[in-house]
Image (cartoon, rainbow over all chains, first blue to last red):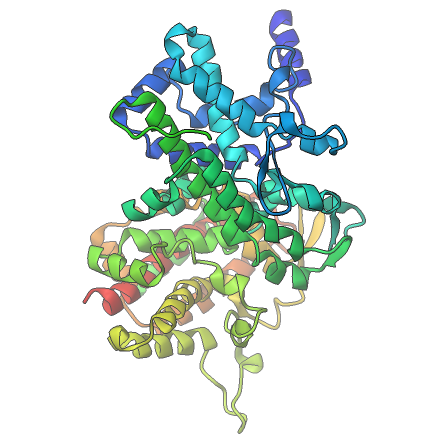
Length: 281
Length: 257
C-alpha cells in the first residue's frame, strides 16, 4: 500500500504545467487521426502501444517532458518563424535570438522521431512507442497558433487581457491553448470526432498535400493574424467577449480537424506500405 | 397526445433524472434531431451548412446575437408571459416570438431551392436554435420568476441561470451532448410520432406548463438541493427528446424533397 502511495506521489510530482494545446484538444486531434488510419497502420501502431490507441497517448509527451529520461524533448513543442513566415531551424538561431526562438525545436524533434520510425527495425518496442507518441503530440502542437513564435512578435506573446470583473489577468497565449475552443463548444472527444471528421476526400487530399514544412508554412499565414485581435491589457466584458471570441474559435476548431487528418497521413505513410509517404522537410 | 403529456408531467413530479440550455443543451437537442433526419433531408441541410452538421450550429444564434447584422435577432430567444407579452403599436398582444419566427421561417422555406444559399443557411441555424429555446422553461419569462434568486451550492444565482446552464453541468451524464442524446433518445416510433405531433403553438403551450412545473418544484427556501436537481433532470429527460423529435419533423418536412 505504502509503495502504491509513494508511486502515486512520485507520478503527481512529475506532472508538468500545461504548455501546449491542452489534453482534451491533443486527444481530439489524435482521435480524428485514429479515425483516418488505415487498418494496417492502426494494427502496427497499436501493437507498439500495447493495444492502446494514439488518442490514449496524445498528451503523454507533455506528461513526461520534465523527467530525466525525456528532458531532451522539452524544446520540441514550438516552431520559430521570421516575420515573413520562413521557418527558422532552432539550431541555426543566432545566439542573440531570444530564448523562446532558440528553444523552438518542434520540427527537429519531429524529424528525429519520423527518421527513427522509418528505420524502426533496429528499435526496441519501447523506442517505437516513444517515437509514435512524439509524432502524435508534436503534430498537435504544430496546429496550435500559440506554438508559432514569430521573431517580430515576441512581446505580443506576453499579452495579457482582463475578463469582466476578474482582478487577475489572463494570458493570451494560454487562451489559444484551450479556452478559444472550450469557451464555445463544451465538447468531449467524441464530439470533436463527430463534428470535425467529415471532410470530403478531395478536401483531405488538398490539406495533406506536401511536406510537414509546407503545412507549417501554410499554417503560419493563418495563425499570424491572431496578434491583431488583441491589445495589451485589453478589458473584455461579458458583452464584448463573445463578438471577440467569434474572430477566433472557428479557425482554432478547424485546426483540430486539420491536424488530425495530417497526423493520419504522416502515420499511414510510416506504417502502411501502400500509403503515400510524407516527409518532414 | 394530451394524456401522454399529462403522464409526463405526473412522472416528473414523482421522480427520476438529466439537464438544459447552454451550448450543451442546444447541441443535445440538435443531435437528437439529427438522429431522426431522413438521409435526403440530412444531405440537403448539410449542403447548405458547408458540410457541417446541425449540432455544430446549435448555438450559433447565441454566439451572434450581439453582432450586426444578426443583432436584430437578439430578442427572439425569450418570450414574456401574459402582462409582459410583446404588443403591437395599438397595444394588442403579439403571439410568442419564437413561435411566430418558427412559423415564418417554415413558410419561407417551403420551397427552399428558390431562396439564396445564405438565406437557407441562416434559416436552418435559426430553426435549430429557436426550437431548442422554446422548450426551455426559463425562456418563457414569467414576471413572478424573473427576480427570483436561488441558492445553489452556497451561492446565490438567478433562477434563469440555473435552468440556462447550471443544471446542464450538474448531471450524471458528464457533459457530452452525443452521449446524452443517445441516452435520452429512447422513445418508440409511436411515442416519437406522438411527441412530434401538434403545432408550434401547441408545443409552446406545453412549454408554458413545463415552465410552471419547473418553478413550482422549487422549495420555499429556494435552496436547490439534490431533490430539485433530480426533478429538473426529469423535466429535461422529457423536453429534450420532444424538442429533438419536433425539430427533426420540421426539418424533414422542409428538406426531404
